[in-house]
Image (cartoon, rainbow, N blue to C red):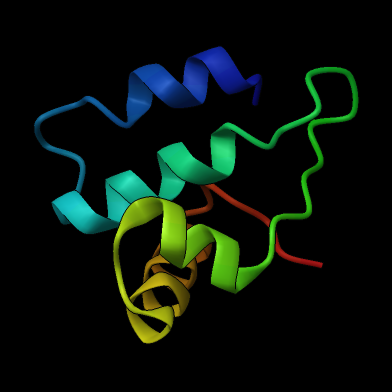
Length: 73
């Protein structure tokens, strides 16, 4: 999936994500390399930029993976 499409999906009102999970996704999208669709921000950077705890960022990433909106290597 291309990142602009993912950004649109994050605004769907029926998407089963909490606001902080959407915010974490948007922070991650800021780090995506448009050509490779890969990014490597640290959990600490994601949590700092999203204004959430490290634990909340990890749970949000888990939810994004669960919904197949994100892959984690």
